[in-house]
Figure 1 (tube, rainbow, N blue to C red):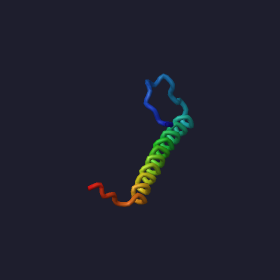
Figure 2 (cartoon, helix red, strand yellow):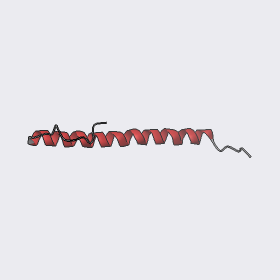
Figure 3 (cartoon, rainbow, N blue to C red):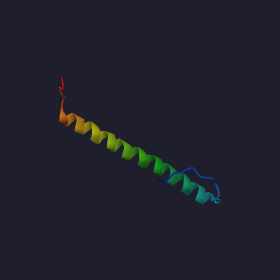
Length: 56
């Protein structure tokens, strides 16, 4: 994942570095959300294809 919480030993000091690190962080959050959404969609699609199950 591109966004982690650390202890702050390495930090961007320039404006370009700070903007770049913010963009990388946002990209990491968006990518994580997209992967999670794709997984949930795949599980829902598999459940829909399986159809209702009568175990009784």
